[in-house]
Length: 75
Image (cartoon, rainbow, N blue to C red):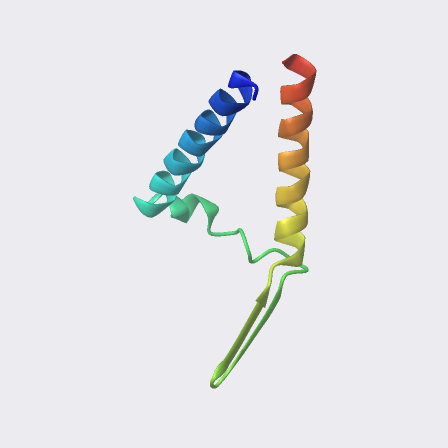
């Protein structure tokens, strides 16, 4: 097994934990728009809620793809 892969997984885990802590400790107000973009489906009725953040997930997918592309390009 490649030791570089283990280091990469640990670093990605730490980044994920740091981002989660940031959101949990109040930084989530900066991302209040996420999930409420035009094209995101939100249906709320008595006893029923449906959230389908289609555009938000597309945006997230594009950002993650660009970051991974840059990591491969520079690494």
